[in-house]
Length: 192
Image (tube, rainbow, N blue to C red; front, side, top):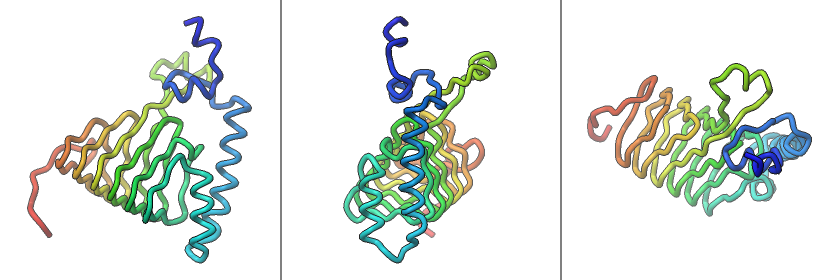
């Protein structure tokens, strides 16, 4: 535990340990991200080259041919990794206090939320202003329907489908379709 005391709040956050988000270093990084997001979101779809430059500065990685429609919201940006040929529709939220990785070829509906931010269940720890993050990983060729919530620590396997409005609380196996609150496996009904 003594080594953990020597870590900065950012290092604790990135390690998935309890940390204080009110730390000045983290507040400055959120402000930088907010400034970049304002520039990105206000440009609309009218200046794609400028938007891509902003995304390259904001995000940890963005693959070729990836589309991220504004408005888009995140905490820090640098913990977000988007693969190639990813499509993220309007209004998505990435609370990226931990890594959020989206694989190649994913399609993400409007207003989907990736919530890597978490809070202790212990009321005493919450009163101290402590929180933590747990990474989210989405495999290749995943389709996530509009309004879905992906909760902290979730992994979604390749070729999976998450129904619109679902709340994903646990891992989704490759090739499986889930829907509901909480999201549960559904039988495939074939192609539309």
